[in-house]
Length: 195
Image (cartoon, rainbow, N blue to C red; front, side, top):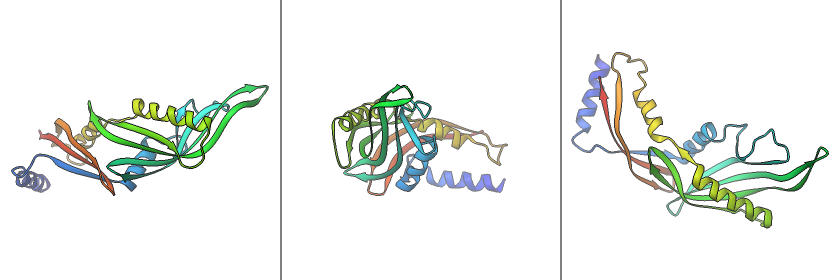
């Protein structure tokens, strides 16, 4: 009972000031989250096929995230091949290079997605590299979604050691997302009911 009283007192003291909470996810933590949840296949994120296809695949690895001009900037290593298997040999194009991906994070329908995505090579260029960057831009723009509302619900409703005080998350909204020099900042508004 004393823990619950402390939590309740803290919540009541904070309630009159504001309902929104600012969550700052520093880039080192964001990189670990990406590694745990997005780059799950031996530190890789396959963007075309998977490791079972030896001649036709594409993946990103070794992401490094930072902020730049109000956008997320991720540097990653791309490795890919677009070839045919001819008598056990892969015949076609392939390359490995560093790519820079910039994007504006946005909140929609309970998910954090990406808008204004641009993928460009970090260094040399060529026909295959330009085509890869175009495909990455389109893929990340349409397929990247992080279910922040579901993650928050799971985290905040988890009874942990206080099973006699079930919680219910409601009215969850991300009212603002911005990128600073050291973190991704989410301004979150929600109601948490303790039953």
